[in-house]
Image 1 (cartoon, rainbow over the protein chains, first blue to last red):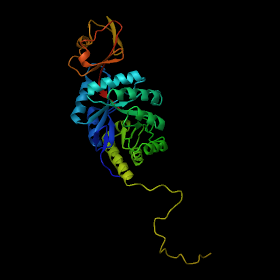
Image 2: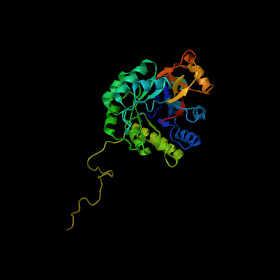
Image 3: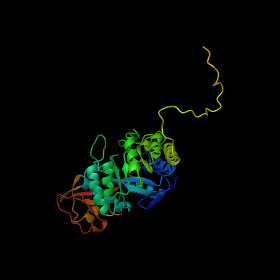
Image 4: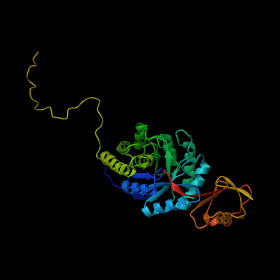
Length: 266
Length: 65
């Protein structure tokens, strides 16, 4: 194994950290965080213009100036119809066939509606989209998504914005082992760089996060911290970590240890 | 005629989707459109008539996670 660049739908990327663009305190902080993260891919969305101030146009200009690739999302969509229409609108406006497909089922956990997700993924893949499905860690759903045409999977670590890390590392690891050739990206729930490193140590190809950087006390420094953690986790995975043991195993050699022949005094 | 634009009821005169964008001041801006939850390509807006009760979405790029 090596720490080579990886490929998403034919696009080769060196950076394995993907970053969301929402919730930053200002466009300047957003731009600085993107630069500090070293990311090559950022997520964007479509929304109704608020207030007639052309903020959307200004945002889009900023992203284009940064020269990063965009991954439009269908955030907030509650039905297959909404998600498909939003994806079609995004393809035209952002000029990309990439789409981070979200079909949300539950208000409290923002849990993916995996049934709608598979249906929407099949429709969009058939229509020429390159779908990045925001999904759960369910292995059977993953199989269905691949069958629907998805060449990348993005299981959640934990609910969006929760910062809880990898709620089900066992299932995430099972996905990795079951689909060794499919690019896997942990999307959502990451809170600290340690969570991101843990995802990478499981063999995940990348991490997508937003809130953990945008809402940090110093988003630019945190973006850098996540970049380092993702790289460290990837290098560690490639270096093949030792398996955990139940009992201690001395690291200092036992051969040549002093005093081993002396009788113990009472 | 009375239609909905981005969830708000509006009295408009525009007979087509492209005329509506002009009427609402969107001309020259980067927007994506949908009519009654179906995507309408930019090139099809001129040939897309509006009728009373239609629901139009006009979306712009925004930050996303």
